[in-house]
Length: 406
Figure 1 (spheres, helix red, strand yellow):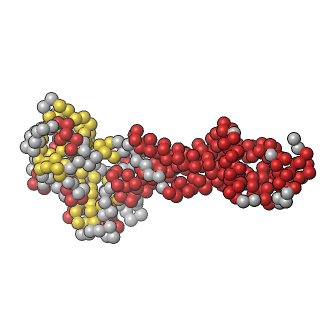
Figure 2 (cartoon, rainbow, N blue to C red):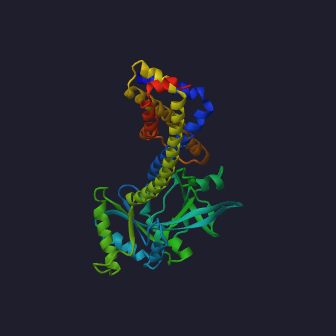
Figure 3 (cartoon, rainbow, N blue to C red):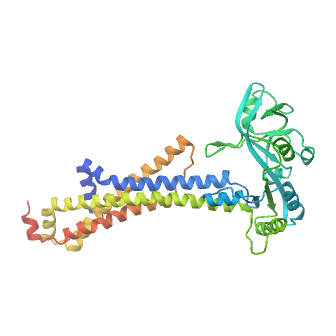
């Protein structure tokens, strides 16, 4: 029997029993839809996170009191017992790290920003050393960046993000004007270039002030972050090792003692994010597999019904010379075709769901060709596996008995 004829018979059977076909394909469609939608969203978000959220650069590392991403309470409590990083630590790393091209330090908190009678709430106030201009590759829309002299004199100067410029200074040149940050006045010397949003959060709602100015306003007890920039991505590990030795020496750690600080890079952030996204995908894949198994059982049941309905047809085919193998292949192809059609609908719906989520919640998605092929392969495999029993039952029918069936 030709394969195309078996596919045509399967399609005709689906079209002839539309409601039954919809119910038959439902499990496969749901399973493939979930896989395609989740894989598309995870692929899109992974690329987006790498580009915009954790985009430190391949040659940049961060020294912190604790990891930026803590996943359990024990790690959090252990981190709270560690010594804080101080400006003295930053100055030691800056002076002693020979392989670092630049070393900076930062602090941060959430604040309200006011100009005249207008407010911007929940802005990010950042205390920066001047070297962060090179490490963070800060680009300006207008004005200038903060300098080392500004930091040494704890000047009340600031660089504002584009959101604050748009919301507070419509039609007004902000350079040289004063804004109030948590009640303290700062003179604006620069406006940052528009960066857009990341995962629904604006990256332009910030105020940058000199680090010493930040500490005078809010105290010097908060642990700072030390940023380092290597000569290149190839020498980053050497720079990290050098900074680790400097920090361990300052903290008088024994050779066998573990670090009481963390050094993280773009790769380490992405590795943590990747483990989280993989865990999420595994859960969804497990649920989708259950849905596919249920869909496969429904397909097997429908194929058994089809064998019963077409008993005389099977007997006639055998009497005309069809072999067991021909009947077996016919019903296997029909079962696989039914599942493949469900898989195709699942791919279309999954891509649509990913696109809809992207439009409604600004969560990026990317449909990969391999995920489409995997979805169709999964669906077809389910059809073949659960079609084996009905097909073998049809192939074993006695043609004489089959021809007597009504």
